[in-house]
Length: 537
Ligand code: N01
Image (cartoon, rainbow, N blue to C red; front, side, top):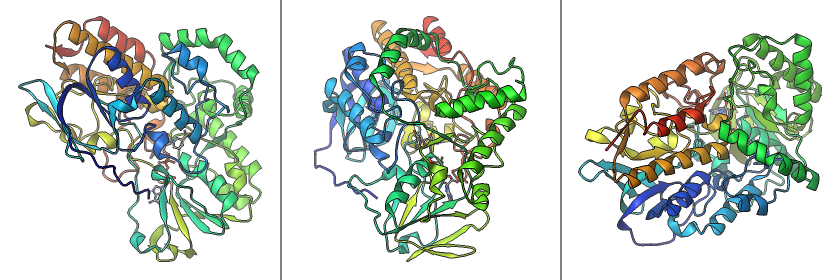
């Protein structure tokens, strides 16, 4: 694991208008917007530079599954004009450069204390301020506190007996070292076949002597069809850009938008359309019809279609069968996008072990033991995911009104009004928090919308001389019920996914993502009605 030695500095004791936690895209844009409003600010970031998820996830093959041209901020025309992506799906180093460019362009680094983790936030009812504490001994008071802490920022490491005895290195994809890792001549074991495993396995296999993939659940993955972006691509994008911005303003549809009234398309039409999406590449196949994620009947056709493709790609029929996902509808565990993932299993130096059939028993000094066999390994890669959606928020000790703690308030699962604020925790905002579209939308677009809403709310409060805004429990309960009802009308609850919290032992089984239509409009209406559902004072 990357061990950062921290640069020494004296603890800060000060008061600012707002604290922003997180130096990823959300934190950076929030700092930029609040500075424009004239607020005094303090940002905190655990890493030693900006970039958030793209700072930490440096594993080989890390790449975005949203086309680069759309994985871009839209708030500044100049920024859009001057940045040029090289590939249809940008790789991690390029996205990190984009994050660095934003930090430079807007002079954001000076606002952020790096290598600093926020440990505690306590609301002081007397002053209506938050007292923020960090692992560096900082004590910062602020009227407004914005948590831009990311949806997938706390790595999940399975507790495997004997891990500490392993003689080689153990890497987690979400905490990849900053210095290059060379697997040449090594026997590498990879545990996990979610997006991180599916992206890293083909790259590791190109270098290592042998890769053993320990798979518990086979996953659906769609080809990226990546390639360089050409002048013609840019021109076409430019031509449609104004229309794209208009669409964003109108609010992107939810992933199950329109499903209720959608008919079951004829079988041949479904297969024809899936083929078109497959050829184009990327994630859109699961959105090919409004009801792919709500109708088992439609989903079965899409799932079969992808299983057939896997069968065609993998030469050994027994391996193809092991790689064929069964038991969850396509799209209900996060869909993966790959570059030659299934083809990688045709290589002589790659083998697949089904650890559902023969579970992992222990890590030994020289490798890994399942109930069936011992595997000799020089290095182990944990592509085992994250404590998603709530992990980073609950890792901090957050106390609101009357000593209420966030972990207690969320003991039964996260509850938040619009995914932006939590009743009992005034003046605290979350960027892409639970109950908003977040990970089932384009994250940069979702971040911009949330940051703009939060900034407007703070500007409104300041203009009116108000210093406290708090979600009303009833409004929050109604929103949470709506998010749940929408989720329950879909196939998502059928899977044991990180969306459902199923990858974290003991985590409440809740689907904390809003997948219906009209989210942006709802947020705008709430603001237009003088922050309906909030108590403002
Ligand atoms: O994590 P995951 P991830 N023994 O939770 C397995 C985003 N992301 O880091 O399914 C054996 O999806 C686990 O098995 P199972 C994206 O949103 C985006 O890959 O629980 N196996 C599963 O196979 C993504 O969805 C991009 O049975 C164990 C795997 O580990 C999210 O991050 C790229 C195990 C974890 O898969 C998370 O992806 C990368 C154990 N004890 C990530 N514990 C792009 O933009 C866990 N597993 C493309």
